[in-house]
Length: 359
Image (cartoon, rainbow, N blue to C red):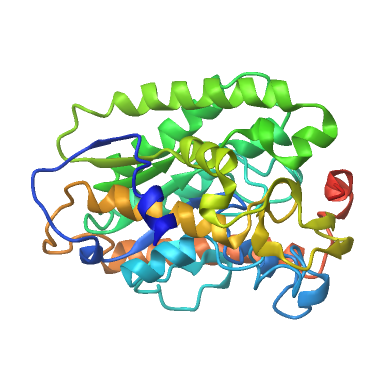
């Protein structure tokens, strides 16, 4: 309860619609992002459904295709909303009725993958295009009663060698604009935690640089989101993950954590040397990813942001009509065929070999 009460206070800004409804009124849940939001896309793309012990991330050390020791914020928030978005790489022939999770581990903010540049895995802006392109081509609109979540940018700075924030922030702003232009009404946007405090930053001596990039990113992102304030049809909700992580790191005991600097896992996604005995005592599960308890705090903060703001009453759903739905499915299936290259090809081993961090 204490974790939920504290997390509820972390909301950066929001631009509201005048009509009030509960968060449970969302019809679907769509997610765009990187490994912080991935619920099985990279795992499936690297052969995890057939050989989980050799996939990325490894099972059982990593929980069911998540880059953590348990559920991630998408799972927790989805449970609270009563919605479970399906990983897009594992879609069944029918469009799922609870949404789609397009998030891919290693995704850049724009096109492609910052961790595995030569792999046909979509970046955040590209993920948004996978959903919006067939809808717009069919002259249809996205579901106005769904929730759309966008969280990205970290890989650009940590792995993509971006030296400034301009393009990354613009990519995320363009993602929001594209969703809104296609008919999305409820868009959840997350800023970044202090990347200078992740274990990998300490291990590589990049803390100062990553901290500066994080601050600049968050400031510019807030400014970009402010440009949408004149759009009265848009319910734009931003969650201040930066402040949440800082609060946890400053007062770990209040949140049930004992170690906020070292990773629980020693090794990398492909070669795990050891796993600590009490991962839930740690803020970080590995050198870059938080533990499931932190993800729960993020989900609680997101839910508090949603419930504190006005959302539209359910309307007649004109989004993703039959033509648009089948068009979307066609593109998604083509992406799945492109992803077939990953089964069981090993594409992440070498690129991730450098992130081994001892606890």
